[in-house]
Amino acid sequence: MEETYARLLCPECGKNWESTPSDLPEVSTTFHCPACHATRRLSEFARTEHDLKTMKQF
Image (tube, rainbow, N blue to C red; front, side, top):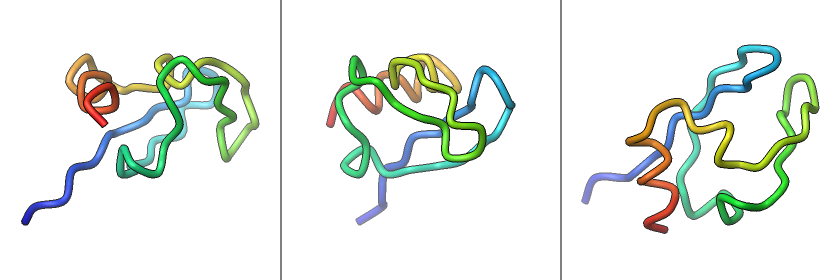
């Protein structure tokens, strides 16, 4: 079975990383960048529309 992941991008510092959707909170939850600690809704960290849809599925 292939593991699903979502690509994330911090809109403030530009940090890129991947995470499995099951390790992330709901997309409307406040989330903090692990690099610069910017605080926004998780949905704003989705790198692409496809990544956002992946996060919403789980």
